[in-house]
Every structure is written in C-alpha cells, then in structure tokens.
Length: 300
Image (cartoon, rainbow, N blue to C red; front, side, top):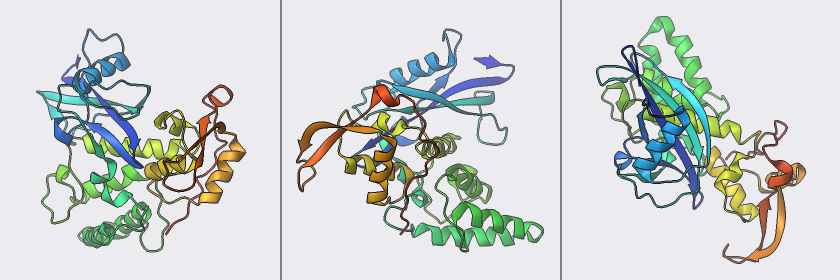
C-alpha cells in the first residue's frame, strides 16, 4: 500500500527453538526476513502478513503479535522510489520444513548476534567490541563520557551487569558506531551475519521482545512440543535468554507457578535415566501472567 510517497511493508520475525537452539525463519538464503507489501486486497495487516509468509515459506503460523513499526528516513529503507514503513510482527512456531518459493530456511539467532549468547560464558567477541567502542567514544571528546556510559550500560562493560533484554540497544549502538555492515562502514570485526535493509534491526527487536516476555507470560510453551521434560523446557528458556539457568531454582519456579502437570509417561530419549514427561496446563493457565517473576539466572 502506498501512503503518499511511503510504502507499508509487512515483516515477520518467526522464532522457533529446535534442538536447544533458537532459530529464525528467513528468505533469500538467510539474508532477509519473510516480508511483503501491504496491498489493497489484504483485509487486515495480519492477514496480509500471513499471506506473504505462506507464499514465501509455506510455514503455518500460530501465535502472532505486532512487534514494532519502523520508518526512519536514514536507515536503509528508501527503496522502490519512496520511504518504506516497516510494520513488524513476532510469531512463535515449531520448526517445520519450508517448501515456499522465497528460498526459505531456518538460521540460528546467534549467527546474526554472536555477542548475545552467554550460555558458555562471556563471548570472546565482546573484547573486540569493547575496544572498538572505546575508540569510537574517544573520536568525539565532547561526547566521550556519554558514549562510554552508553556502551558500558548496553554491553555490561566496566563492572556493569549484563542485561539480556537490551538486544536492540546493543545493535543500535554498534550501528551508530559504524561497526556493522548495514551502516555502510568497513570493519575488520566479524559481528555476525548482516541482513537486507533494516531486517537485522527488526530481528533484534523480536529477540528483545521475546526475552522480556518469557519472564511474565507463558509464551515459551508455544515453542514446546505437546509433552516435554523439565530439562527440555529449561534448555528452551536458556536458548531464548542466551543465559544459563540454575536448575533447582528453575524447577522451583515452574512448580510454584503451577505451569505444568505430569502426563504420567516417561521418556528415555534424554540419554540418561528415564525422565518424567510434562505438559502445559492450558485450561488453567491460558495467558496467565507469571506475576513478574524473573528468570533464575546463574551467570558464568
């Protein structure tokens, strides 16, 4: 749809967790997110998005919510002869084969954001990022203190605690510092796989939304199979948060919130002792908030 000289583009961040790894649906061999223009024939924004996702990926959609709208004039979005208004959505799915026509495929989150995965400890790339951000701050003495503070807050530098929710702020800071390919500046750093136009920025927004959301709403169960072990549930949450969780504290939180119930069955697929299978208590807890509970995090 054309609004003056602007085009409304619908973009989907479709997230799944497969084999304990967070994944995102992409098109164009991993270079872009599923997307397409909002056209007059579309009944609603969401129905238009579902049509584009079906056409490009062939993947069914379940949970879907509007994410954010981007329309920055200086952020690689002036295409097709006018400014593009990017209306993004977050979808949670279980990974399936993708027979669509847009060269679809699933890719790991952390191939695009290698600094966001702390499950094996502090990522080594953060040392290079810190060095570059210090140099960036010094290039403008009048703003050096403010830039240094922002970098410390976003990336947990100088004794500041890492906040897993600040995915978008970190991406934006790297963009502003000219360290990302999307910013059009050459760099020697390998800061993850770039994407078309503002799509990696939109992916960062989706990851940030989901990381925050799993702390107060049981949306993680949208990504789980019908039955699962508590360890599989913990690994899923860890994959999304990019952090290691304390096993006993995690299980205590799940029990206190009465989120799951036993199925009465066991599985030996975990490779060790047979483990109990659980399921989400849909009837009792449909869309129930988790009372603002924080994830029980154990940082390495």
